[in-house]
Length: 166
Image (cartoon, rainbow, N blue to C red; front, side, top):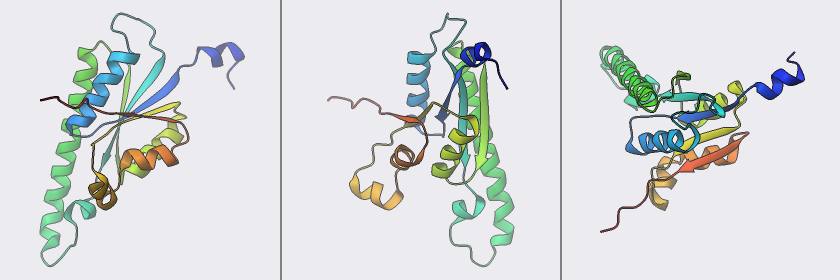
């Protein structure tokens, strides 16, 4: 068990959801700019980036005849996409002088993966980007940020991209 001095020195954990969307990239950039100042040697949070990799069955949808040949190709593509997402996120963190980053790829539905990551890391904050879905799209697709805001056992910060004024 940690002594009181060690407990105070231990950083709080911030989990940031990452995927291949512009909204996710913006949320990560916003978080780094506001919580991880470039020249501070002691950032207030330990940063954990989490990517929820879809399962093969969810990516393929309804599987019909001939699926056995397709599944390995879909799995390989999902792995390549996940590797690209985490590599891009790590490079982005390094470009902002944030080098102490934990990156995880967890297979499953993003809602569950993120809430489980909060529990696993005892996170104080979960950061998710907002896709800005309207009511109908949100009802059909479900909102990861909405689900996490109601189910994660920590503060949830939903980062929205500013609307572009014409």
